[in-house]
Image 1 (cartoon, one colour):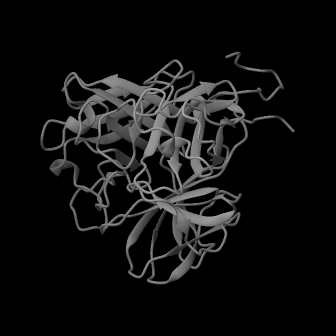
Image 2: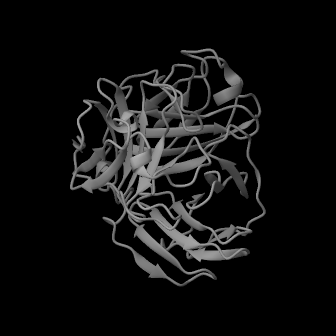
Length: 366
């Protein structure tokens, strides 16, 4: 069996950085080896405090009507907020379309600070799924609409909760390792559920610095995930499963050292890593990537649960086969955030390049 089926991860995931020019609409083009038409897009204004992380997807639709009563809600939601979908015209800019190799930003009602403010720096994390083409899924107790890319291990799932604990089909054909749920029509956190922390079904919130806890859900299967909603709210979920040489999700155990933490083997050179201390409250979700910082230590981090601009409080080193934690190397938080002694940290990582190609050849040297 080949080491990986994905020799070029940029066909499925890319990080784009760009400088805003204040012009709307604006087409932005990716710069990876492959063209990428993104179906899940996560953007952040890196320069300004107070601007939201924006998460949107092609299943709900860019600038598309939604079920929350808004005339043009567009599916845009902030990972640092519990808010429902926002109407783009009432916000500070939004994504209006995905392109063959990028996406289009629009101004919203007040000059587009969230997406393209003049002379400010931005980052966009982008995943390819299925070009916006969805299908009905009736495998669960609740019918769903899914957009699936089994090769890259990602599914976007839309469903309406029925007020009970019930199952939903995800369409991947393999058990998801991580599922993120978000209510669309009412306020509610970005609930992340994973079995990668000590094997149980644990949860945290992308919008919260709180620690993780056991959620009591049944384990995910190759066809089903589980969700509990006391109300009949519309939901969107993002399901991820590990793909060798492309994505890795798990935990590492802190050693408490202030300069050199654990090494995490991924089997690829990371393009994007997000880390959360699972046992200590008030520690953010730290986000690192290979585009905002191209050398080690990689200490330009964002926090998914805050509107803060990028900072240098924590750092990691990115290598050809994984990453090493460098707690406090560039900042002041110290070991309790990324390397708390005898505590577990959860991570999600996506590849720039696999460590070994599908033909068994090492692909990177650093």
